[in-house]
Length: 331
Image (cartoon, rainbow, N blue to C red):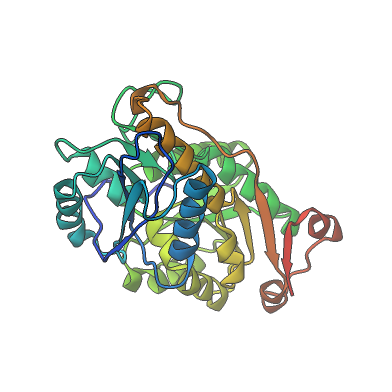
């Protein structure tokens, strides 16, 4: 069963300004100007960790604070309406590169005339979303890192099926404003039908929609819930995990923080790696490389985390073999 609504990409994001200074050892002594634009919050959580990872990556490449690079950091607090003003501010500051995180951020930058090169840190499908002609040769103003979202979702389902061997109805949480979720939902539905499973879609793009959506998934007899990758979901992990538990729905997401927040499992690339790696793209661009000629990169490792507290609350037994495969077990 596919979504009852059309999937529309929307403009979004917001701003919380907080400039930091970091710098790099470059031969001319010229001070380079780099922006870090994050859709969610810096206050402590994933945003703070990812920003720190990016700064660490810059330091590893010799960029030294106060000498030859200024990093202007902005955090949107998940408020889409603030993004246009934020981007305009960064343009006035004459940033040479923007390191960006979050679909709404990418869409605003894509529609911004005279935007500097953009390094994507987290993305499902830059080709589908119109940021690149191909992964190997983007051809435009965007480059960076992406994930194979469709393959990842199927792997997550395999992990859930180990815990629930008779799994037949799969709930999926999507954000209708995420441009990639429509195609992902179609791919998952077709793959599930071949295995004799049904897909039940639930839609949430605002905080107040999360609890009713999980209630709806439970009424429609979903046995598990898979969350598609999304910036909004990543900012609402605790509420999503809580709703899944209240409605007795085992759930899995791509970010390890989800298992920490109370979700049953998480499986995906460690995103701090992406943010550290983003510094290498910045370095190449500052040294003259064109973003359209820098291939998008995919993760080289994936992390499985399992929350045994949540498993116990759901009345589930995690097979020992699966526990042995886990990189993190929360007890």
